[in-house]
Image (cartoon, rainbow, N blue to C red):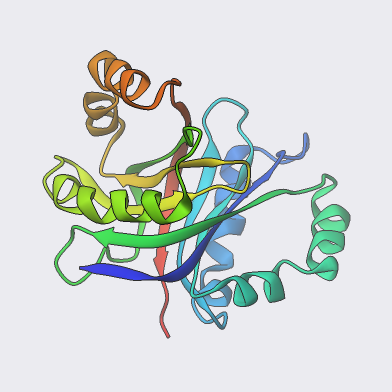
Length: 209
């Protein structure tokens, strides 16, 4: 299944409060499943812990930018600051193409050892957004056949980057793809090395809408 439209992916990271152990954060995540399953315009959410920092949050796929902006408003930021004791770091990424490699779509799950990765590569000088989008379409079939890849959002960042948000069935599958040969190929092709952010994904939530 592929989705080609004006979807937006939003990456949210919030430092875990010192008084909140990880198991408690996971419990609170589970308690919000019903809320997030019916938010207007939200099509897919990964509840996440960023691997390096331990920050909790989510990777949200929205139908369009206006739906995302309506949720992440000033009141939302103030509520996070008040309730979590820390400010949220939020990034908006255009996602013109999404592929789902699971028949019928990746199902909801809790407790599976899923991993998400955010890959960003600087767009080479002279390359337009239209060319980047054409490149996404040309690469779609390649990513249909990557072992362990459940879902990918092809993304264009706000700071002149492109890449993808990947959902993997395990860290081993992700590491097998993002090997030294892959890094070197990306660097040789685009003139800059990629950056990769790693996230543990305790909960996967497709929209119930």
